[in-house]
Length: 34
Image (spheres, rainbow, N blue to C red):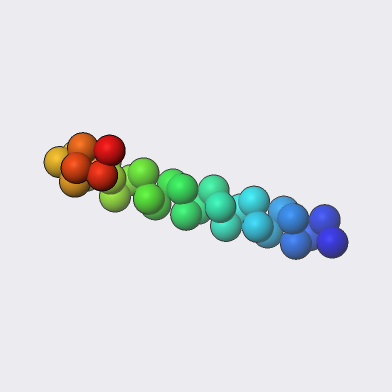
Protein backbone atom coordinates (compact mmCIF):
# COMPACT_ATOMS: atom_id res chain seq x y z
CA UNK A 1 0.00 0.00 0.00
CA UNK A 2 2.74 2.46 0.94
CA UNK A 3 4.69 1.18 -2.06
CA UNK A 4 1.89 2.30 -4.38
CA UNK A 5 1.83 5.69 -2.70
CA UNK A 6 5.58 6.06 -3.16
CA UNK A 7 5.29 4.96 -6.77
CA UNK A 8 2.58 7.50 -7.53
CA UNK A 9 4.65 10.23 -5.90
CA UNK A 10 7.67 9.30 -8.02
CA UNK A 11 5.54 9.30 -11.16
CA UNK A 12 4.04 12.70 -10.33
CA UNK A 13 7.53 14.10 -9.74
CA UNK A 14 8.85 12.69 -13.01
CA UNK A 15 5.89 14.04 -14.98
CA UNK A 16 6.21 17.46 -13.35
CA UNK A 17 9.96 17.53 -14.04
CA UNK A 18 9.63 16.67 -17.73
CA UNK A 19 6.64 19.00 -18.10
CA UNK A 20 8.42 22.02 -16.65
CA UNK A 21 11.58 21.07 -18.55
CA UNK A 22 9.72 21.13 -21.87
CA UNK A 23 7.98 24.40 -20.99
CA UNK A 24 11.35 25.86 -20.03
CA UNK A 25 12.61 25.19 -23.53
CA UNK A 26 9.46 26.63 -25.07
CA UNK A 27 9.09 29.83 -23.08
CA UNK A 28 6.79 31.34 -25.69
CA UNK A 29 4.36 28.43 -25.50
CA UNK A 30 4.37 28.68 -21.72
CA UNK A 31 3.32 32.32 -21.87
CA UNK A 32 0.51 31.40 -24.27
CA UNK A 33 -0.74 28.71 -21.87
CA UNK A 34 -0.71 31.16 -18.97
